[in-house]
Length: 251
Image 1: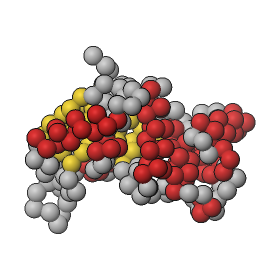
Image 2: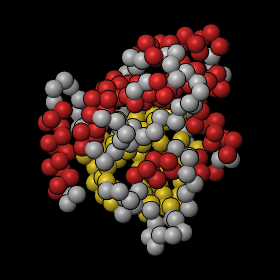
Image 3: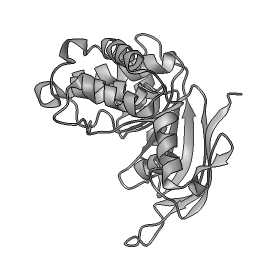
Image 4: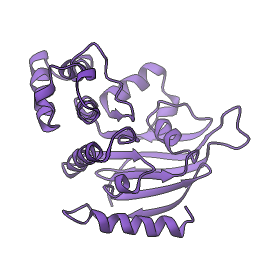
């Protein structure tokens, strides 16, 4: 059994304008080395659950344990340190700073964390940008690169501090298929290297890169599907299995 990295119990979240909770007594465990995917229709609570587990959203009831500490009790400074030290984030929009180059965007996140010296951070940044296949564009501003290049730089920024968990909220939602596949391939390679990932998506093609899929509906996790780590050329078969599974859930 893999170690549990992050555990949520009884997670409930309500919005004032909604009649029903967006998260309704959710229990979830995230395991070391898993590529977990959350799927479900719009409004099911997918992104809200991701942001709650990462400490970015407050919850109304329940506990979220990281290293046996309930992060719902943390002060904002403690949460910010946790997100800097242990968690990485990739969003649908890259949120890169517009007047900084790709290299500078990644480097700033490393400098702020202070895990390494400035020289060590600079070397790590260049290594990551090369790994993300955007080294050729490291001195360009975000407005001067493609959406796929910008998102790959955003992934480099997310992992510059060696996060224990990488949170990805619809990371391919704003990309075309070619750029999406490049981003998903990078996430898959990171997973192969041991990175734990939690990704939200509505796209079966993207979900096929995961090893564990959770299906949400009306603020609850209703079903789970496990997949082996992806091997070359089995993507279509994985998509077909996910489609059949989701169809059985009337999605």
